[in-house]
Every structure is written in structure tokens, then in C-alpha cells.
Length: 509
Image 1 (cartoon, rainbow, N blue to C red):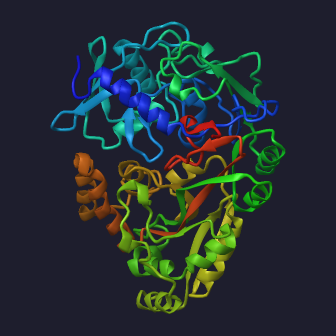
Image 2 (image 1 turned 60 degrees about the vertical axis):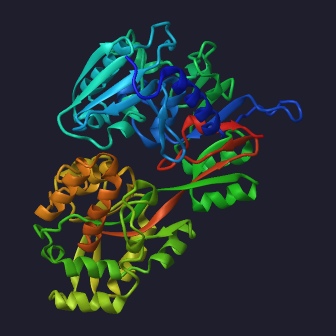
């Protein structure tokens, strides 16, 4: 079955697209002849992959290593545009409750199994049942049906404006149906991707090594003969490894970035997250003061965002008053400085709300944000708000947030696609809306986004305006994710990802 883009045309589009997309890459081959392009890429990875089962794939930092072994149904370009990959074309029905996906017919997995509609269905079914960290990506999918050898249909219980995005992420990774659910795939990925794992060279908790797959269907994305992910959790270790030439690229921060720049490393920066206060208890269940919008607005006016950014992040980022980033489609220019630094106005609002004598705001201590907490504590004190910093959150923080343990928290949150962000921080299903705050007005705006189809991003601007006006959050700034690389490789940043997609590397020109 074919529709929209023809398979041959889509293949040409994909080939050209990936050739342009993969304009980054690197190598550690120090013995190359003068002027010869490097053939190996060594990346400093910030986390270890615990299972290579594609259904256990995560997003962000975790997604990149999976891309070495697994193709996804859709390809997400560096600018966020979605292009064909294993899927050649896709379209919704008029109600946006059925997505029909046309598939490539010339792809095999590394174990020889054929990629077809049955394989795609097996992967999507497995993803829904495997209880992986991103299983919510297919929550709206009630079933997957094979139409013919190269076509599947995804039935949805309700429209999901993020489904196409998810099919370029963890949910779209395709593994061999013969390997899905086996013990072996946990330690050795079996996909249709550009690289295969070198088990002999791979060392648990140390490095994962991949070599170019000889029969891969699209040679344009194979920029290297070997790709190595060195596990370097410690920031100082990553910095030293980059400067000394042990790795070609890695994620640093503003402070360590100065050392990298001193060693002539190149910066590929992108704004991925926003940092600030999440004012959870907007109904005043545990902190009555937070029920009053004037109190929440006063907190926003208390912050000199530019000064905090300069002090804490060495200016690496952009001050903002809104939780949606520019790339989301929900960003609104006039909201960028909705709450300028105005301590006098903050004090006046607190007085109007009956908190002239002061207000206490309790937050947990979040590892890595100690400096930020110290600075905002002082600025809040200047307007009459006492910030009490409690015990440090641990690896149970998600359960603690969901259990309404915190009325507020300083955190860094992802600025993703509008529907992703809404269901992360705003809707009653969102983890970071633990008190389930909502109003009929807000819910109507959220429903409009869900049913908005191609207009979802623009409709999400109304959600953004509402939560900013109601001061659900106190964003301070969007921070630069600082990805450094050496001169052997070129790297294109990936929008909304701290580390670039594996396709964004290439030998330096």
C-alpha cells in the first residue's frame, strides 16, 4: 500500500536529508595521515545504557547510543523537522485517531531478519508491554494493525499531537523481531541501524564500541568505521578526556567549558531546558500563600534573572518568564519578559495578598543546584519571602513529587514539543503538577491543543499565556547545553537535545 510520498521518492528525500543532517562527526584516530579524514568517533557519554532492548530506551542523553544500533520510524532533523526513515510516509485520518504508516521494503536487521509491517507491529506491541521508561509515549495507541507487507495502522483512543515526534524517539526504534524479549538483546542490540556492537571491545560500565554495518541500507549516515561511547559520568573526567584527546566530543558546563575553550575545543550550544521554581501547590493545600496568584506573581517579580544567569551560568543562556522554548511552537515573544525584576512591585503584591509580614516557601535541596538556591534565597528575602531549603532529594524524587511531598521545587525542566510539555508540567496527568491543579478555562485550552492537529503548537500558545499570567512557575532562564568537540569532527547541535543525534557528526571538512 502506498500513499502520499512514493517509496522511491521518499528514499531519495531521506538520502539527501540525512546527507545534510549528518554534518557532524568525529574520530580519535590520531595516527591518520596528514590531511586524511578521521574514520573513528569517540564520544564521552554521561550515562551507561543498562539494557539495549529498544523498548527500554530513554530520551535525551540516553537516546544517542541507541541510534547507533537502531533506526527509528521517523527521523528528527537538527531543526526538529520530521523526515522519512524506516517509514516513507504517514498520514492521519480526519479525526486524528488513526495514523497510517508506509514502510521501507529494502531493510534488514543485523541478524538477517527482514523489516516489514509485521516487524514494525511487533516492536510497537513490545514497547507498550515492556514497561520501559518511555512507555507513556504510546499511551494513546490502542492497537497496531498490519494492512499489508509494508503498511501499518495505529489506532488511537484520542488524538495525540506528539505521536509523530515519539516515533522519532524511543517508541520509534525498531529491533529485530527475533530478538525482542530475549535475554540477549539486553546486552547486545539487534537493530537495522548503521552500526553493530563489537562485543569483544565493549566493556560494561566503561565503553560501548560499534563498527559500521557492511550491508546497511543508507551509507550516507555511516560517517565512521567505528563509534565508541566512553562512559564518563564525572564532569571533571569528561573535561580531562576531551582536553587530552581521549574523546572527540562530550557535554560540559560553563565552568569546565572555559578549560575546553582554552584547549581550542569548539562549542556546539543549544538551549534545551529551563531552570526556575515550580510552584506546585497552587490551590494552597499545604502552603495557603501559594493559592493567591498575587503571591505567585510577587515571587516572579523578585528575581533579577540576568544577574542570576551571569553569576551562576556565566551568562550561558537566556532570561525568560515562560516555560515553553522557542522551538516548541508555543513560545510567545511578549511573555519573554513578563515579570521584569521589580522588588517594589513584589512587595506591593505580597502586601495586597496579606503577606506583608512575610511568607515562607519550602523547597527540597536539589543536588547540582546549590548555588542557584543560595542566590534566589537572597533575592526572595529582599522582598519578604523566606526560602527554607530542606533535605536533599534522592533517586526517589519522582515518587516524592507525585506524592505531593514538595509544595515548590527548584529544578531544570525540558522544553519539549507542546503536547509533551503540557503532559509533563501542566495537565492533571503531569508529574510536575502533583496537586492536579486545573480550571475549566485551562482545560478547554488543553483540549484545543489535543484536537488541534497541525495547529497544536499555535494553540499551545494560549496554554502558555494562561500559566504565565497565573504564575504557575517562576522560570529564570533557558540554559545552554554546552557540547564541546575537537577539530577532527564537525557537529551540528540537535534542537531540544543536550547531546546531538548520532547522525549529526561527520569528519571535519
